Length: 258
Image (cartoon, rainbow, N blue to C red; front, side, top):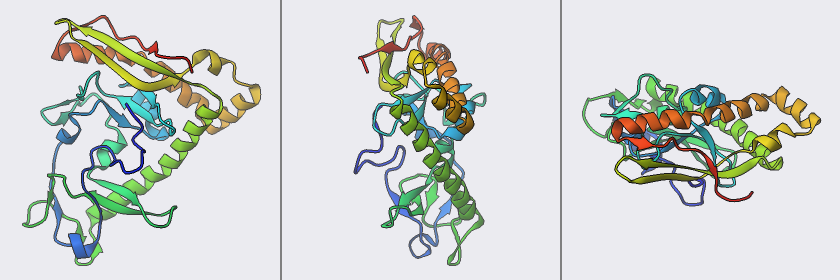
């Protein structure tokens, strides 16, 4: 579970992100699709506004990179246990990062600027024909594209708040490395590493001034949602068991000293 923000790396799911333009994509259409594109990933990025909802269904941890990106753990191997036959489980929250696909924002030359893009490699996009909803009405964005723009703009705003939370966690030295292990009934071993969690002892001993500030900013609640979500590793194992029994329950263990 590495940091996806490395220079030159494409964002998760995206293979050919292109800035949308009427000149290039004027005839393109988007047809209905499923979540098959997310079937082979064991994690999905989260923003702070959805940590509470995601924590009810997934372990929420942090990437080990500089960004301290919160992520939902979706499986114990290179597989999403919440997607079956292209359908996301009805009883589980779908992260906003997944819901916005194949749209997204890409940075412009202006370091503070972003433009709406689409993954041209998505099999939902039709370059010709009448199937699906149009991306443009003439030279203007269609209602579909305008909705995508609004969704991605809101997501980008939350991304800024998410970075601030991650920076605060690092500034207080709260994040420590962890890994989760399980042994399948057939003897296969599964291991998930490269993620971090909040150290409960350090969290309990935050300075009073920091506690007050974090309470006002909502960060105390986010930290507690994260810590409570770690119990979801057991539920994750139950899902794994339906696809192939595993025992015992994976326990997040310290992989090295912070």
